[in-house]
Image (cartoon, rainbow, N blue to C red; front, side):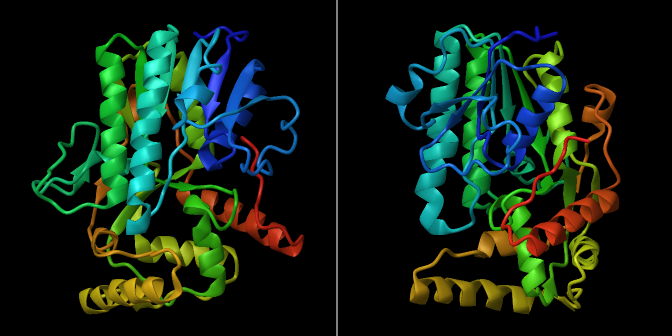
Length: 343
């Protein structure tokens, strides 16, 4: 059990998962929280705690700025990452997700950090041609095409495992698609603003989903557990994209996507998006690999997190309806973000 007076350092605290972990820690009495942020970071997701947290202006990719962050730190919770399917951001993802994690691991080892919680992703589990079920033991198949994001998360995990091999007490969490309120044009929360604008097609595969509040609860359990060198898949339910899109659309009164993204349409869509990005200079939202991934009937097995770590999950439809109501409220107030309580 980590003492309530312990110094906890968090990366990505201004993002979806990181802000909820901060709020969760504070709610149970961990008030010695230090959070790394950049000068350009938005501070809107922690309105009630913005002046309570000890903010450090630094960057996980800048070794010099990190040197002053680790003095006296007992616990590191590493959530910072770049999530993108734009090939133009491949180098950035490797820089932040891989090199940034390596820096956090190295400093944690150098300063004798007692506990390191690494927030990864189910994307890092890779793909196996043998089964559509993915869990903590799924082996990465280098012969199967994958997204640049997935590859960067896989490589970042290798850095975390290196830290464990060198003596760092480390536990890893792999959440599936995170349902939660945050900045509506960023990360997984962007699905709400996209659905509000209208999405005509639904992918034909399946995906796993998890409430951000359950992710933050799992992070607290992982931090205080005796497990070392273990990973846990976090996923409440695996459902079809068609069902997920329907629930999300209905939660905000948007039109329900009614057309399936068939292979022909899928291949046309990513090529058109590539052309759009070239002509406009904007980010590419869809690639061949990411389009292909949405067609797979993947099942995420989270039984280990339930049975070993003791994580319980909210019903997915209930989570979606909660976030939908927060989205509608923020739209009415003219805000481009929403804030979600820990319970």
